[in-house]
Length: 498
Image (cartoon, rainbow, N blue to C red; front, side):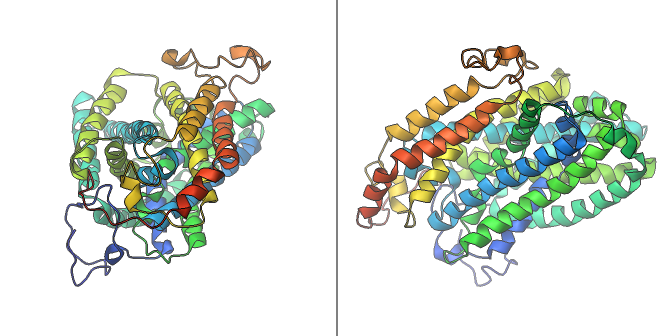
């Protein structure tokens, strides 16, 4: 991207971002930690946050238990994003490039592939939900919500997401600001319109669940929110000036990402707890079901807020999925990687919208299955970052013979071991293709796949802890050796994917 006199003013002409995996130069670093509020809030202000109230109660717990699980799970998981975002400021490169300092330049391809799968999966889910929500709204208006409507909706939503991902950082930052304002206002209106559907007597009568069910809901909240973003958390902070406050980066990332989901969760719990019928309907159509309690005149604004909120999250995902694909070894420009991911996103959305009728079961299975290796990577990444006293040597992030090495065995072994243990401690009976999981619940005396711990999803927590504690205990010497090496020379070759 070429320099221009108005750089940093926010008024320069939009163009396709040419940056890929390359380091962001000082001349192009702009903004303050406060600016991180906009992309993170815009990506998480989705109406889908209301549906998480129903998802949480589905674990068989009470309103107060679900509220506690949601608050802890949302804030803690986005706090992890905030810590990873600090790496972006210190290293000026995408998240899955900075991860090379722990795994080695080519050893990092394994977590990059997992990151790519997670972000493509999320953008697909969000696009499919936006499509189904649009069709439901139009059907209620009497305009038809059949196959033709869904096809048109999918084309429009998919085009918005792909254009945002291909254009890149500047368009995303401007788009998220608009989405934040519009979606925030319309969401408040929605809450006001359906508030009379809340019946505290019914909500307070929901029985309490066990400790295991509470933990299951807590982990689900973590995987559904912060752990779904942690592998992309540095992709936006890398554009901040190097002297930006680290505390500010953590604080604004966590606050911006958490505030909307927390408010939406509370209201979603109240709605779902007030009506068994609505609670059941949300499992089949998480967004569309919320239209059934709306007056007809607000259906079009609701469609706008639903689609914009989901598009906001999907745009961030497709941008980061393109970067993860490049980090995994694909040698194409960033915008082509984003375009390829867009094609996969559309294909996956077609499957969800037209070919499956069990959204919630597949969704939970997807989150917990990929949540385990991502949690293991997150533990390794955070411990590696905590051990460092200096900024990253940016040139060596691209050199297999540099200080970070080619393939680092310890982080890879830790990640694989933590994933194997984690998958043995989770179950996904609603998704038949995942019935092989939970193989450690019996041998460890936790009651087997039908016992009380079967749905606690302990594997996600175990993978996070094993990755973090293992790296903290065994990685100190490696990090000190890396940081004792003299500064490397600047790169004299083109960075793949730049």
